Image (cartoon, rainbow, N blue to C red; front, top):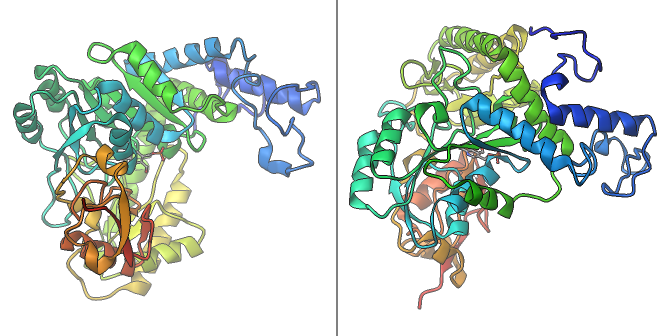
Length: 487
Ligand SMILES: Cc1ncc(COP(=O)(O)O)c(C=O)c1O
């Protein structure tokens, strides 16, 4: 475990990070003053640091503005913390978000072009980016990732695919990719950066699931180091930071700093939670000081888990070149076990995982895990697979990975078009007004403006029948769909 540099001055900061983390320092000081009863708050929050009304649920809550620092001065502290993060990632612009990579994707979409302009985008995108296209009025030119024929899972988008799209759409204003993918596959970001830059446009990368990339020589470089111009990552997903926390990073040769700021502020709260924003600062300070050591341990934990799990007959893991070595993706089809049942066993054992579908379990292993937590997970998973074992079957991957969209009208136009609700049987061939995504992974199978194909309907029904959650549909039972009203 990392050791404190000096004896910590506050037991609430056990590794002594506050000396290099101005927002953390402010949060510690503010909550300490509140705990000592030294504050008579005449500003928000409405709970006024009392825990006898709504109770412990508001403990530790203090706003950035008027808590972590004064309303007039907190911006200075925030800018200092963000510039430390920019330096760490080799960027020259960084903002801390309390609204996840969802907000980061939407801010970057608002920063790159003008309504009506084309943008090259992976169709394996998270729904937040699709809604970013709606907000910004950008017209997607979809590029599809390669798919592994054995597993059906997505790989990266090939550089040549993006080059061809850029050549066919010379007016496109940016390239948006997701890397690593939800299943940890990684691509040639340096090649993509070259392709985008030769076309004179920025490369933006959604790296929501891999904030640790680049902090150990055995990990792929992060997107900014690989040459991307913008990158979003969720601190809360894989770093020891609070839920909702995210970083948006950019280099400002091809992106405009003032426009980035305007885009970021347009959809961010004016009242960021101090604990969330300070936790990004703390996680950044920890990565800067101990990132290499912590990531070495993470890599060791994941390698050990991969070895252990592949000893279970029929079980496989994603591995090898083109896969993030810190990602654990467990494939169950060869053991004939139903992933939904295995997930239920894991939940019953107090081990909720990030994704469980028929053929796959994806736990999130982070630098906060230990040999013990990972060993317990592997043992519990192995025991569940033994109980649920059946004949090996062909994997039937989630429809999210294999969408081949037929875009009839751009997402923004569809989002604001008059629409109606029709029974599922009448929906095939109509244009979707809504976004429908099995969640996780949150990749839309139907997006506003796309033709509802028979294949998409069948795939959504299968995902639901198997036990998947169908998110964002007005009717999650899939009995009806919202479609654009025909003229
Ligand atoms: C690829 C991808 N991007 C963005 C997001 C949104 O992240 P957040 O939950 O931090 O808003 C997710 C969420 O799962 C995601 O999978």
